[in-house]
Image (cartoon, rainbow, N blue to C red; front, side, top):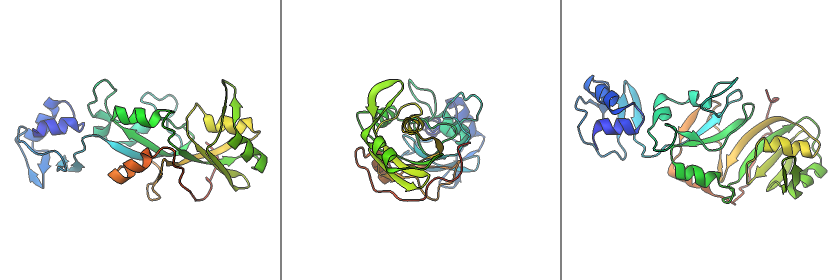
Length: 257
């Protein structure tokens, strides 16, 4: 594969831009400067730098982002900055047939919700992870305004009716983790679902954090605003559907902003 095509596939700009990057000496491969944009390389496993920034070739991008509060999961945000501003330009510019260029979030978190968010440019993977038929488990740590009691937990497990859907929505798992906190596992995603479910049992969400998707937990060393590539094992773990792995950890701290 030609070097200019490799750079293009990774989101470093149109082919003419990529050609210029190589010809102007901004690209190195295996530590050596390359000035021939038509030089052929095996892309799989290729390591290179562009303007001094190291990069590794990925045919498809699969990322995990620790979403901080105060960001919208939208390419065209309103009052808050977009999560996509937390990513480097090549990830936002990756060519993608039939879709908006760059990686896309799989589902959304409200601007005041923190935690695990997946992004990819693989349309088939987005569909598989988003389909309600796949029942991919998502675990939320919830802070509440009022004390959590057993009756509320049982109602969430039995199912509550939301105002726009006559079919009861139930938690796949639910447990109190403190006097004002609980851990909630859902197998589907609806607009403001956690907040509306808590309201339906007479409580109110004050903090909301997604801690796990499938069998993968948000990495403990991934700080708010940081992202990383998913490896093969992690990719397999997030795709595990009906498995609800045991989880542990402290309840969320601080109010929803």
